[in-house]
Image 1 (spheres, helix red, strand yellow):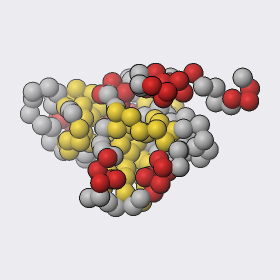
Image 2 (tube, one colour):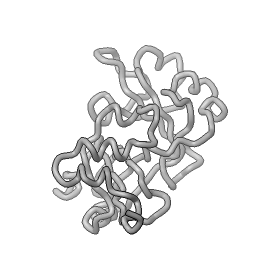
Image 3 (tube, one colour):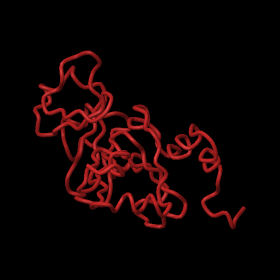
Length: 189
């Protein structure tokens, strides 16, 4: 793995810079789930849909974190779902759980729910994901489209995500925190 790719890692957040005009990512917070020489994969944390998880995935609707809605994870494979879970502390690893960072990992939704009970504290389900080919994300970061910051477990499972981007920016050191108060269109200021 190249050193440039090694600098990006699961658990980091990508915050869309104001210059990022792609409507799929404007004002988004993306949780990186995988980064390697072939590319990167993540999910958008702050785009809940109006669709209850129970309507699409039945019994998983009783397990997901509030709001019990499906989140729009990104523009790729929107007919598929990724489940991001928080493993229970000190317990056995859930069947179908793939650890990523800290106690966060991906949960295979084909795993029978009864095998997961008691091993996962929190769960959020995303329709689709954000994906980048080899070097694409690094190029977007270099051109100033994304701010890369450390993620916190709470960011993944926040109930009201409308202000997530500003909250994450506020806790950053230096000038990056100033972007939390920047209007989306400085001309209107």
